[in-house]
Length: 191
Ligand code: SIN
Image (cartoon, rainbow, N blue to C red):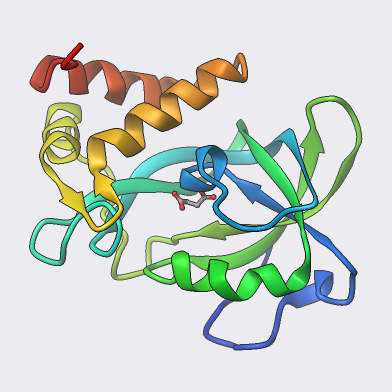
């Protein structure tokens, strides 16, 4: 992976010379595109694990009570499933705004679940980012997710939607599913 941050406006990295490029979504971008794309394909990246270790004070929480959203942690041998979107380069502008709070833009190799591979952009919050929260005891993370909400809605919906989308893809993610189970014990499902 090589860094290509949004702190350098206009630099979209080695993929910017293409008519279209792949974006890999593993959090909200997996279940809620909300941007124009040319096609979408289930995909996975190697060497990274999804963790709800990033604080969100602009979407799923507030500055006073930040929620928890996904980032990627380097993890040799791990695999992270998500959704790849082929987008026109101009779609990156609004996406950079949506993902601005704590994410950098990186490029990585992805594998499409139906076969084949390509390079893709991915948004990631690294530990040196002020928005990075890191790990906490599971009941503590579940309580935070159960109680926080922000302009994009309750933090619990983020987790539940993410888990539901992964199940729909036939994928497992022990970290996400463990947090979802812990969420039900602190805040049972209304249904
Ligand atoms: C992503 O979905 O790829 C980035 C993290 C998020 O927006 O939840």
